[in-house]
Amino acid sequence: MAGPFAFTLLCGLLSTTLAETTLNPPAVLSLSREVIKERLTQELKDHNAIDILQKLPLLSSIREKPAGGIPILGNVVNSILNHIIWLKVTSANILQLQVEPSDEGQALTVKIPLDMVAGLNTPLVKTIVEMHMETEVQAIIRVNTNERGHAHLVLADCSTSQGSLRISLLHKLSFLVNSLANTVMDLLVPALPKLVKIQLCPVLEAAFEDMHADLVNLLRVPISFSSDRLEFDPLSPAIKGNVIQLKLGAKLSDFQGNVTKWFNESAVSLTVPYLDTTPFSLTVRQDVVNAVVASLLPPDELVVLVDYVLPELARRLKSNIKTISEKAADQLGPTQMVKILTQETPELLLDQGSPKVAQLIVLEVFATNEARRPFFTLGIEASSEAQFYTKGDRLMLNLNEISSDRIHLMNSGIGLFNPEVLENITTEILISVLLPNENGKLRSGIPISIVKAWGFEGASCFLTKVSGFKHSAQGGHSHWGSPGQGGRACTPTLTLLVTHGGP
Image (cartoon, rainbow, N blue to C red):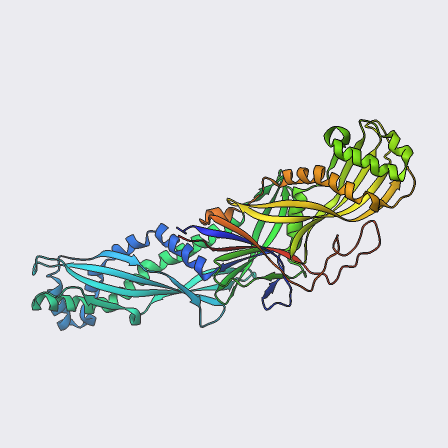
């Protein structure tokens, strides 16, 4: 089993000029050799590889063709083997697996060291004669492409080599017993590698297939949030250095399973950070992240009787309106009403290294709750600081503060005025009304099933800062005013990095 780990979130605006691997699917899962080694080790345990090694038919294998098939020597060896009551593996261990780049390129070599002790029982001595046996199984992980052009991961070329084989007597006994043991060890030199290949290689291949199938099934588990769910689907694998990368397609579905949005490969680049010592990472493209945020924060309408709920803000709002029109201020009754409408879908942006959620808001002020027409309608380009963190196996998003980046007077029944005079009071109303409402929708978070399934526990959150890119409040243009002054466009990505967290 994988031990406790720390789950780290990296949310970054990643420049395509960085010396990293650029891909263009909706998401990429990168697996380091560390996590491959750990998952394959666990699968070998689940497939009872140790039991298979302990049941190796050593005696029958060396009796098949003793002395290379030479009749005279064969008779001598057979007479020696007749003094053996049984020969079997008494203990077996699979030492730490090694996964490293293959010499053939775009492949990984898996090395599995085996450490065994075999016991020899003979009437020539009352104690068990023990032999220490060491050998190594090797296999190659590569990407195969079938006739239809579909690529998939396979484990192939499983074998053992005599160069890795070492057999020695643990305890020397009498000359006669030592001679018998040496004869047996000589016979095991050609027999053991073949036996291990026949018995263990199919288990290794099955373990890899199950590991890959478990990963694919885990990736396909829907990530549920709000009333929607996000599903990933493996597109194709690639091996780059010592990392396996799985390109993932993605789709967004409603609670009935109807697909509402497909995310396919596109010209939009996706920059995958180098894993270094990180076991695995999941990098998600901007449009997928924005779709998730939009699902969590759908367009909404909030109506507040300000004088009842926020009396101090109601008093200040009346004072601000009085500077525009005393007549309008006098019409404000105890049921004065503020209506807040969130327009379109919010967008996750990065501004100088800080993640923000930008959204378009319509704010209307009514004299009373019975008034049909508002005093005025404001269009507000607002943004909030986006705070990512983890709680258990869930990815959390919380919005801190709200700033009104631009305010536009869309409609007025009390005459034209500069909407900037209402900036402070409208911002405070948004902080008091809209912000708690949106954070309530975000409170449940987004479950990341792969984290818990693979035994990762703790979590931390950090942000990479990439300079040289700018965003306006809404991706470079204003919906209600003149075009914004955003600089060169760049695609934010959300990357989940998993690191070791301790014992």
